[in-house]
Image 1 (cartoon, rainbow, N blue to C red):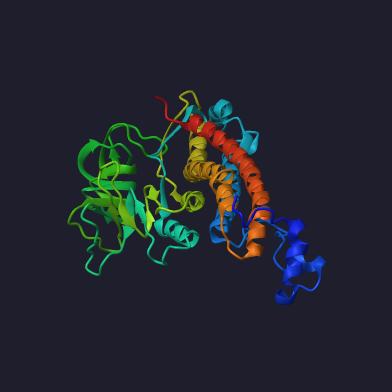
Image 2: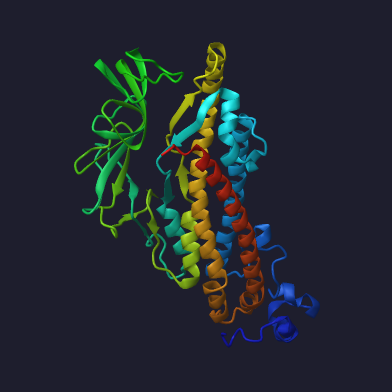
Length: 435
């Protein structure tokens, strides 16, 4: 423990205050604690107040804990809302706590006449992180860093600026990619996430919805089990190639491409496992923060996960109506199902993105709890604050109390996140495609 902090407790306040009465304006010993800064905040981390010590590196950690708690509470509430909406839509009892693994298929059969449940497939949701947020967290925590001099590294794609002529400047190790989102964006040679429309002038197979002549039969969703002549529309995932028009987002990648028509540009690190690009914008991969002190590290790492934004993915849905349903009942059920499916798709896509963010928060919680009982606590004991006795008092007496609050609060939040993760996994298992 730092010698300047040893023994600086509330019992020593009268002696300290007595020596400072003439110079600090502390006029009465019973008011010396508050007047001279020898007191802890009435409301601390549990009330959303991170200003505990007046020391940037310590209070920055408490700020990260406060931000985490707010994010975790919001994610849990949002997941519960999506699960409850799905359960209620098929008359499955239990709301967010419904038994999806044991009852969802039966509920779909009872309500819509489906046979074998429903299958939903999608690529993992893409999460992006503002690298500047991570760099700013590092700079605010490290008092020796010069403003604007701290940067973060990105292992995926980093959003880049597009010049007036559409050119994009990336480092020599990075590759340029352009993503356009306008409806009807020509995606020939690119990958589409959304609906890819291809004109079939001659009959050909169509792994999607046939808007034209189908040589076989079509289901309620318009999918053709034969040959299609006309327009074929397929729902693509992020890695689906599209030889027609993409109604969604289409990405081109190459060394000499230009990003025009409002397309978003990214500089993507090479395929090397350790390759990164310096990044100040939005990073679609993992962000590597700059080197900081031990007490700052957990705060900076947590800021990346806490501020991550995860995008709902495009879905591929499969289903079959029971063959033994009567003609009229089958038509009515299919019409009702088609209307229900629109809302269901939105719920599932949102839930997938929330699950991805939840995993980020679980990682942040682990790091923050570890630091609260380790690096931050150690730094507080070893910190030399010179003649700032008020700050010294708070670091020695207030910080340990609030670190215990952080550990307890994050433990409770972690339990709630785990429960939400379990419920989400149960539902996702119920809708996973067979095989």
